[in-house]
Figure 1 (cartoon, rainbow, N blue to C red):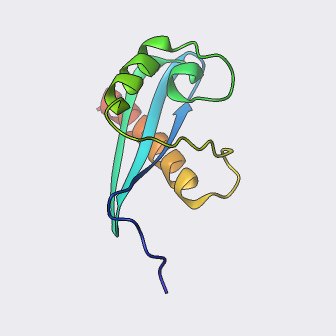
Figure 2: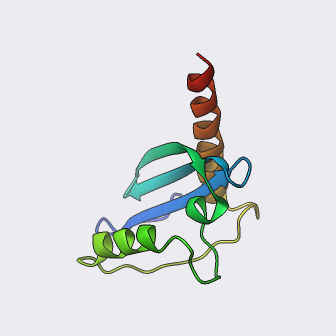
Length: 111
C-alpha cells in the first residue's frame, strides 16, 4: 500500500552533473506533491561542478544560493542532504535528468 502523503507538502529532489570542470553541466529536479510528480531539467554550456551540485563545503556559487533562499523565504522548508550515487531512487533519477540535459545540449550544439 502506498504511504499517505501530506497534501500540503511539496518534496523536491535535485542533482547536478558536469562534464569537464569547467564544461557543459546539467541539473535535474523532481517535484512531488501528493501523488503527482513533475520532472524538470536544464543545462549550461560552460559551468563548473560548484554551480551544478551542492555539498557540505562553503559555497562558491553564492549568487545561486541567494536566489534560492529568496525563493523559499515565504515557505517552511526542511532541507535534507542525500549522498549522491547511493541508490536513493529520486536522487538517481535527478542525476539521470541532469546527465540527459547535458547530452541534449551537446546534440543541439552539433545539429
